[in-house]
Amino acid sequence: NSTAAIRIDGEATDGTVIQNNLIGTNSAGTGVIGSGLNAVLVVNGADNTVIGGPVSGQGNVIGGSGTRGVEIWGASTGTVIQGNHIGTDATGLLNFAQGELGMLIAYISWSISVSISRGLRLPDTMRRK
Image (cartoon, rainbow, N blue to C red; front, top):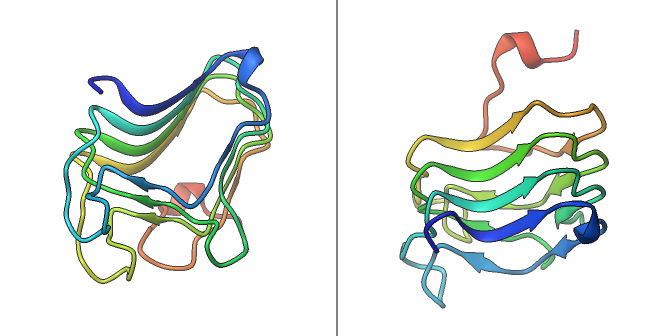
């Protein structure tokens, strides 16, 4: 797909859940096949989207996109991103880097939850003080 492997777009997609997928990788999760510009794109008011989850097996392996692994753009509130391997294989050891960024969150209403255990560094300006 040239725009996104998974595109969640608009109010009609509220509550979408994306769990236990290999996005941009081969079926074994051991190699990159690519996924267009973005692997997962959430836009235009798609609220309460869940990407991954806190329980083992709910996370996604997201790698090899042309630009971003996960992009949330616009007024998409209540989105949860948790337990995923973004830019790595399923073990978290092999680099399946995105073309530009692992994740981009821009022009949003606040109320996005991102759980980071390793592999992603936020700029100092985005960290809670």
